[in-house]
Length: 583
Figure 1 (spheres, rainbow, N blue to C red):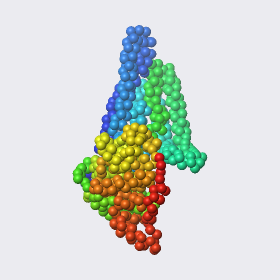
Figure 2: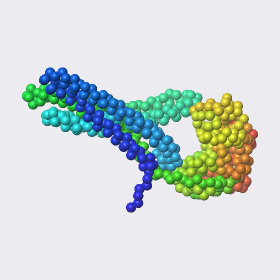
Figure 3: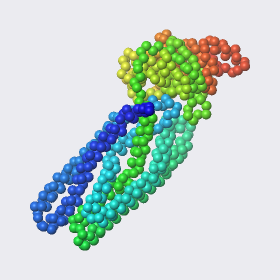
Figure 4: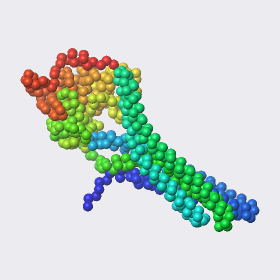
């Protein structure tokens, strides 16, 4: 029988380490719950021994022992809270990085469900590292306290047992009645948050076109749906919580009344009556607290389950061997890509190869699959079928260090990170200043950077907000060229560039070719075809034509009367004038 594959969850040993921490807390809980008996025992001894005998010395000794026991109780409670705080810290160190990194890596897969894993981790971590988990750890002690009450008197024991069963039933009813509403409320709340973030990111469009009221209405609709579900769950929880509190108070009062009857009948001492009432209150308190915090527990349980299922679904990855001497020879073998719910593939069976030092331009109408093919070439997403190989190795399986060294990528929408210009060009690494400046010079943005307030040390803020589109694009190009990679893929690299920027881009492509770099470019402008060797024409996800640039252009020109060309050359001056984007 084949052994099951070891998952990332198994490799991280989350369950084992979490069990060790919880087990340690449970050990201290043993002593905490035993010391809880200090108060009822003290009461029983005072009523039955001290009041009956009038011995002051006995009272003093009992008080000293009780004080020491209660001090120990306070210290042990503090240790439990201390351990839970360390549990939260342990989860931070163990899972926070893997949650982010594996979420990023798994977006390569078209079948990846975009769970809100960072939010799930925050919910589970905050709950497990807080005192809110203690009632669930104390609840197993309820039978122990019920047995003690049985030892005081069977009638009181049956009263305690019956009330505990009723409260446990209410807890189960609370879970059954609110679980679905809590999950759906969380999903609706996430949709509302996603919409709000999208509205903020598109604030310029919202303000420019007077969409504020429409955005507000749509957001309110999401919030109202989430709020209604949350309200329903909260209403049910409030009713059950109030019922449990009323039952606990009523049972404690009933225990006093029943105890008084037993004292009158001579079946129990007055100290036993007081002690049983205190123990009963302690027995029922964890159940009542569990019911009161059930919504928080349910959210944490759902989040923890999401994390566990996610990491269980990912096999442990062996460290990929480093491949030195990669030259940039690119092979695309029958590659196709289709999103799970899409009616048609975005890319269908694309095949071609490029030798090092070759530049390819991908052209075609919008939604023809050019950007998707670019993402496949650099391993940003995994193909549904086929392979993309670099020097024979599948780009998906390359060592991360090799990817950082040999691949440069500039997406259509350039996003920058918070940090300095240097940080962004150096890919957030600790590379040398010489390599950073060399990349900026290769991208033709060295002088532009020097004109910024602090040059390469200029803080860009969130997403480089104060830079123009052209400036972000040129810094993005420098990032793609950083370290002289062997394969560079540029998706619409000149969409926001002025004439100087486009001239620098053409020179950067030519320089990369001379250095032996394989270059793939997506563009609609004829000015960018000057350094291009190969041309690929895409339409409806199909690579219709691929070959030498001049041969493809001649073929297109010859077929122009019968079929509208896919690429329409325009004069350089007109192309740059129409697309100029001054900072």
